[in-house]
Length: 137
Image (cartoon, rainbow, N blue to C red; front, side, top):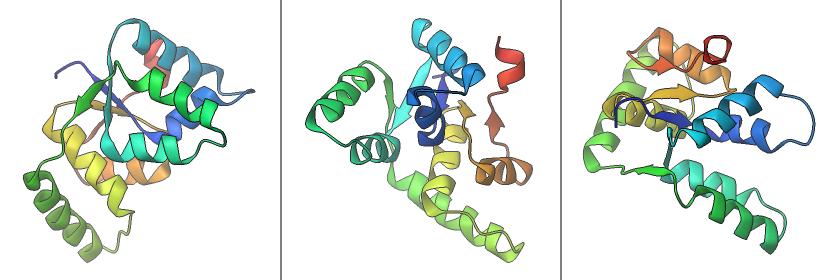
C-alpha cells in the first residue's frame, strides 16, 4: 500500500465543494488519475451519510468504488485505544475516528490528506505522515 494517500472526509468535502479549495481539488484529482487514493470504512460512511439525495449518494458510491479500501482490523482498534489513552495523558483530545484513521494510515504506510486540525496535532505526537498540498503540485 506504500505510496497511497488516505483522503480524509474533510478533504473530500473540499474536493466536492462548488467553490474554493483549488489546491485541494487539484491534488485529489491528480491522486485519482494516478490511482493513488485509499479510503477506509469510517470515511466512506461519513461521505455517504453526508449526502442529501439518493442520486448524490449513488454518485459518491460510484466515485469511491474503485479506491483502495484499507481494512480495519482488531489490531487497529487496540492500537487506537492505546494511542488515544496516551494522547489524553498529554492533555490532547481528538475524535476517536481521527485517531483510528491516523493509526490506519500509519499501519498501511500511507500519507494522510486532510483539512482537519486534529490531524496536524496527531502528526506532532506520532509517526503519521501528512500529504503536503504545497509540494504536491
